[in-house]
Image (tube, rainbow over all chains, first blue to last red; front, side, top):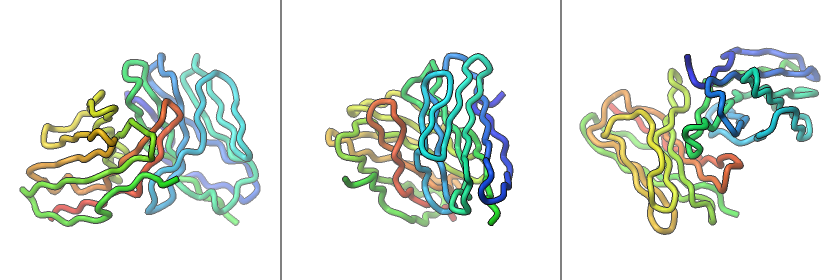
Length: 112
Length: 111
């Protein structure tokens, strides 16, 4: 079982819709969870981080964490063509707080 | 505030050679991590340094090594290059546990 798993996509949504990206992780003791966005040919950039169960909202982005089920999700409301990118889920495992494990990423395409 | 600076941006090397990549973190960031990114394997953790100490290392052969200097700048070295080492090498700096800021990366091509 891989440490961090994501649907590879591509996920296509129409402009203005809600995009839902999901991630599961294997280390039940993981403490920190991150979402990064990576445009083609660019390096990843941090969108959000979440530590506690529940929702965290930042503008059009909402991160949701459920530690009991070991999943974290990212919702993008009012999706825009500029949101088209690969979204990387990342987790800090309990055994290595100074190491961040990335999932394979989900490719999102927002269709105008 | 200057971002994370990686040099060089592009490198072409032949098999068997060695290469050194450099990374200057954001001022005040003492943690520097290195990742290898390939289309097939995604982002793979290489190692993490904090205050000149390697705190963690990924599952890469000993040909991959790194170090960090007292000013937090970091270098990684790959010796005896193989074709499979062709990848984008990303450096990331962080302050605390609030996520990384990545550099633009070094694209290494081994021929």
